[in-house]
Length: 290
Image (cartoon, rainbow, N blue to C red; front, side, top):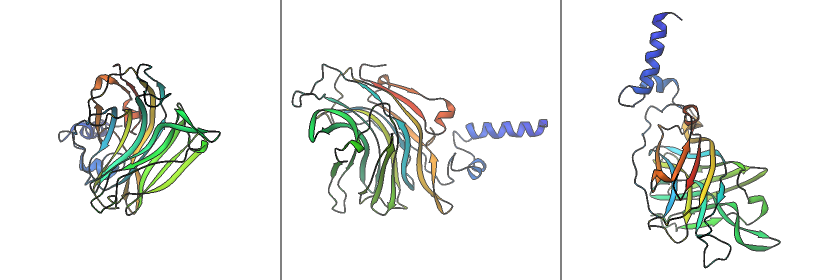
């Protein structure tokens, strides 16, 4: 490589990272918008934490996204034995979850996996023993009511700590999200009616790892020693329509707001630059602090 060409290459790389106060140059965008930024893509913005849980959220900017997906290793769990649920023997007041979701048309969704009870020989267990798919939506101005639903309590829909799954939600038809969990030889797939979600509408999508707390929504987090560790996202991507097809745009760190709530002291997030470029990271949440 001659010196002039080498210098041009170095300047191009520097400009990709640094020019325009953090904005990617138009030339780079035109070359590879899927892995950098689309020409008209809206950047993410700072958002405030909401009380009630310990959670790590990565949330996109508001744009014409069609959904979100990724591959994740489910976390290992160590519960705080001093936080048992007095109303439900065998259960705790902390509950881990790994989920996706979004906000479009004024409607919020949380869709993914939560630590749940199972059926054993036809009897519902007292303890929560596996991750099961769940779906939750808020009410919509159209009149659609809020809703919460679970996958059936069947062995084919149970996932366990350490298992790797691919999970996604995608607008496949107007007002309908396709939800898929696939991994460890099991698969759950369903369409979930969401009146606010329509192709071409502006909205945001999120990825969340959390320690939820029973009957604590909207309140300050309760002190706990519960540890939810080593949940590793291998990749995360946003669905978008580009050049007449739906593509998967990596949710790199320029495409999401990094939220660690209620405070960063409860989180250990590990990712190299290469891993960050494809939405990959390992997450540990420790209620006792890192």
